[in-house]
Structure formats: structure tokens, C-alpha cells
Amino acid sequence: MDAELVQRSKEIRQRLKQLGDSLDYSAKVEQGKAIELKMGQPGFWDDNESAQKTVSQLKALKVIVGPMNELTQSAEDLAALFEMAQEDDSIVGEVASEIARLEQILDDLELKALLNGANDSAGAILSINARDGGTDANDWADMLLRMYSAWAVGNEFKIELLDRQDNDEAGIKNATIAVRGPMAYGYLKGEEGDHRLVRISPFNSEGKRQTSFAAVSVSPEIDDSFEVEIDEKDVRIDTYRAGGAGGQHVNKTDSAIRLTHVPTNTVVQCQNERSQHQNKATAWKMLRAKLARIEEERREAEDARKYETQARTGFGSQIRNYFLHPDQRVKDARTGHYVGNFNSVMDGSELQGFLDSFLRLKAGKIDAAD
Image 1 (cartoon, helix red, strand yellow):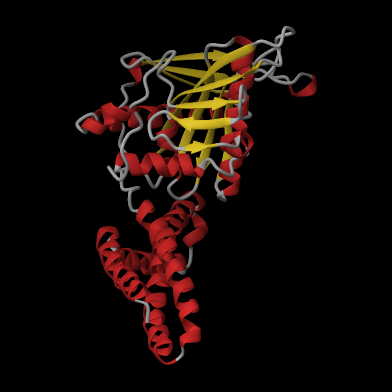
Image 2: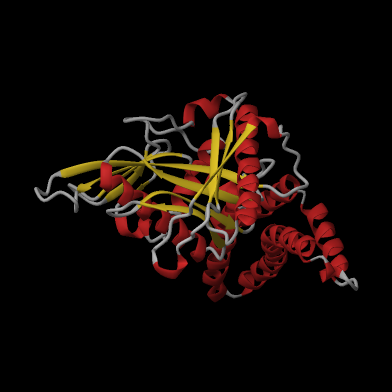
């Protein structure tokens, strides 16, 4: 048997044990069993909102427990495969393929183990605002909205549009979506900051190159069990008429809601629900999420790496650069992660690499880009 394969097999077992300890695998297995038992009780679905939260907890656990179960069983099967290969050289190729497969599953799980923040398992509330660049920036913000939506759908997350302000000529002024599913916030929180696009402007008759900016902010979608102290006296409530595409769906009442938390100058707005009451409830939920993110950042400020990787605002401070001219490429300014196909990032299929590289940077697994 190839000595390299033997060594890689030993490393798989060592990594599996270390990963099980860091993920508290045994405790997660017991948690999953307890939740499944609870779901089998009569009346579980009587309170649908509470039931859905429980189901989400189980899904989050299965993201870890399922692959760990497979790895544990496959590691045992690999030992048997090694014994067979000692007697039959034709099986050595199968051993090598299985080791490579298990190493890939381990890599993916070790990455998920980095999602250990207080709110990383939560859903995400993601907002996009057009910045410098005129109509091009509005169009760019809309492109980013489609990119994140495509990534979410591709990863089987659920999306809900919470707010959208269209620009008269093209694109959007701003938009907010909720991305729901296991680890959504953990993956997306690294997207916060300015995103810069360089291209030949489709809105310029002279065909000049245009640089556009859009700002992305991400907050955890927290439930009511998470305590966020908000003094209602500190919140200014404004109502306004919701925009629309015209016709019978135009809202003729001031149903849209804007909340401003004065001490932190945090602003959220919602106009996508059917009534002012619903918009107000959703806006308060968004505000709680934003303030939870502010508190999280305050705690993270104790980590020096936070300052090294934190996105600033303004020209030259973008977290990622997207180019359509003079060539097509996307490069992260923090990690150096690079993709030479602009469209494969914008359709969501190669966005994950940027999310993963930022997680590794935060965990000290890779060095920051120069």
C-alpha cells in the first residue's frame, strides 16, 4: 500500500476527532434527537411560528450532524477497504478516490466550524444601497441584489423582499431582503462594505468607462428570544406612501414605515407588506437586527483582525472590485481571492469562494491581501 495513502488516512481520522470535539458533535446529536422527539408530540404544530423555529433549529443541526455521521461511517469503511487493498492491488485506485472524497467533506465541515459566532446560525437581513456613480450605481445595486438572490436560491435558502426603492431611470436606490436558512448570516456577514464596479457605461452615449459603488450591510435576523434593548423614546417613526409600478396596485395610503434610532442614527424602512401595521412590525424586526449587529461589532472590535479587515467607506476602501473593462474579473481586496469570470460571480455560482475565503481570513487560516 502506498505510504502516502496510509498517512492521509491517518490524518483523516485525526482531523475527524478534532473536528468532532470542536463542533461538540455528541451534544449536537443528542439535541437533534430531543428536537425530533418534540416534533413527534401531539399539538406540536398548534403554534406554527414556534414550530417553524424548532424546525429551523433541527435543519441547522443537520447541516453539521449529517456530514459528520457520513464521515464517521466512511472512515470505518475506509479501514476495511485498506485491508482489501493489501490483498488486491486493483482496489488501490478506489482507496485513493475515497480518501480524496473524505478530505473534501472534511474541508467543507472545517469551514462550517468557523461559523461559531453568536448569531452565525441565524438568517440574514441584507441591504443594498446605491452610492457614487449616478444611474450606473443604481443599476449596479440592482445587479448585486440579483447576485445575492441567485446565490441564495442556489444554496436552497429562502428569500423575502422586505423593501425596495426603484430608481426612475434604471436600477434601484436601495433594497432589503431576508435570506433564511442555516448559517445564512454566518456566510453573508463578510459581504458588508462597499462593492466597486468598473465598466463601459450603458447609460453614457459617449461609451466612457464608469466606476460605480454600492454599499452592502448585513444583520442577523434574530427572533424575539434574543434580547435587544430599545427605548421607544429613542425611535422616530415616519410614515410615507409606498411606491409601486402603477395601476391598481398603487398604495393610496401612507402605509410605508421608516424607523430612525436616534442615538445610533440607524435607519430602517419597510413598504413591502400589505398594511402599515405589517410594515411597522417588519421594520421593528429590521431595527432589532441592525442594533444586534452594532452590538456584535462592538464585541468584535476587541479582535485586532476586525480592524485589519473591516470595510471603510469611500473611494479606495471597497471590499471587492468587479471589472467588465478592460477585462472581466472579480477580486476581493481583503483576501485576494480572484475569479476571472465576471458573469459566474454575478449569477451566484462562484460567489461562495469569496465567502469562504473571508471566513478563512477571519480565522487566521490565510493571510490578508497586500
